[in-house]
Length: 266
Ligand code: SAH
Image (tube, rainbow, N blue to C red; front, side):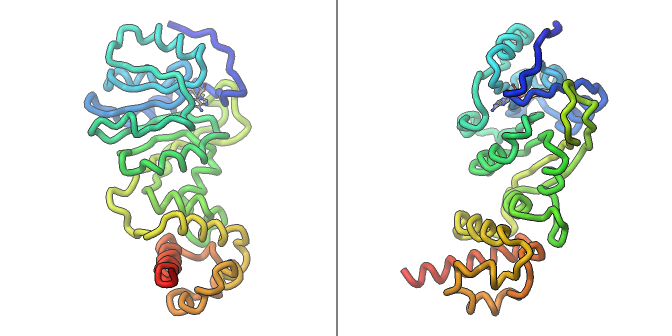
């Protein structure tokens, strides 16, 4: 069955046409029959038609109603495959949890990728892994180490929750229409046990934000809104460092120290 679907810009539609890249993605996912597999934005089923061969009970979540109709017809022979018409950003993914952790796959519209990642990390403990096609620049930021110029808020917050494995670089010609940017597939695996635990994750996120708003300044300067805590932080961390030089564990140390004295003050 073929599809005569005109790509819709407002839905961020860039369909994969490169069979070699598709095969690499399918092999990286390695879907098994017993997996709780969910594809976000299956589109015209470029990846889906391979995934269903080994996991015929997978879930599809697609925003474009026309494509949902197309997919329902295409997969009418798969009684176990479920198609939902919905927006990934407002979907409660915990509803897919049935005792089996979720495995998520998607060639996502690039404008929703960062908010979607943060949305998914709120249920990180229910997720086994994620394979996403993203803008290559975003994948670089996700996996960046301290000192790297792309290291920032996104790197710290994602690495706090997940192991990041950049897998497949993908050029614009692999899609129709071709996007203006380079892409890459990344695997994200939420830590089964977090290596560093922030006692207050909202505070961690606020501190990381404050720091990277002025990444060229010293920590002492960045942390002015937390002036009351600077003295105690001095013994834990070199405040003449810049935020881009700090590891995830350093940020967690700062957040926990501030959190503990906030508790004492209460
Ligand atoms: N996976 C297909 C399609 C990629 S294009 C392929 O690789 O060829 C991105 C897909 O995501 C489109 O099908 C688009 O309609 C869908 N989409 C866009 N925004 C979405 C959202 N918020 N939630 C779910 N699907 C979305």
